[in-house]
Image (cartoon, rainbow, N blue to C red; front, side):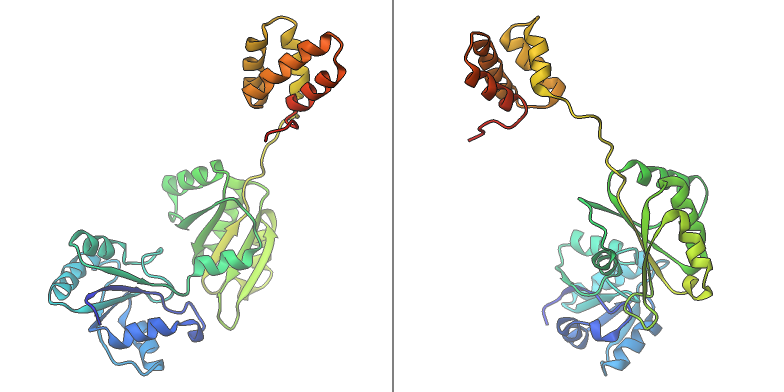
Length: 298
């Protein structure tokens, strides 16, 4: 197996979701760097894999990174895993990956289960973009600042939460984001998996209605902020008013700024409107169509 750091996704719940490639890497790696060696040992035992385990967790990642760099320097293959899902996604691993890359060693991703993409795929929330917020700061000014930043953006929001903070987080999301819907994903791919869409205003009550709903690990997906739209602007009317006071060129330029319609199209429309004043009704009709954005763009 070629030397390098293999970033291996492991199941987030159902053990059947591990990939054949992940099993191959875990079997052949010289060392497996694990967030919690006890958790990973359970996974390895299930698949009858024997391997040397070393710990790479939040509190020792920097020191452990130097040890792994030495192993890579010896030509070893190292597999990096978290307790569940894809390493370095709100889990330890990003510092190690960065150090390995900086030293010129290969980093090979072994994709697979991810709580984030699993939740998004089952949420039914359509959006042009999604902001992944990870875990919110626990409290204080940092938490308020993060929520304010999220509220200001136009995108849907995905974040992780633990059971002891789920109610507070849902309440804070409602206060910051207003009346949006949230998809609460609990215990994904596990026996008691729950995926429910509720308004943020009712989310805390939904959790409190059943004590089991506050148990397990959560992914929350909040729909995007509603797009604020103003009244439609009739480019033809704007152009006509401006032509009463301005030249064709000036009227087209200003109408374009006001309406967003292409300036060259409005210029042609203005010329046609001027011609229409002389009695050419077909030119006038075509000009109005262009001004409304319905002209021939070919």
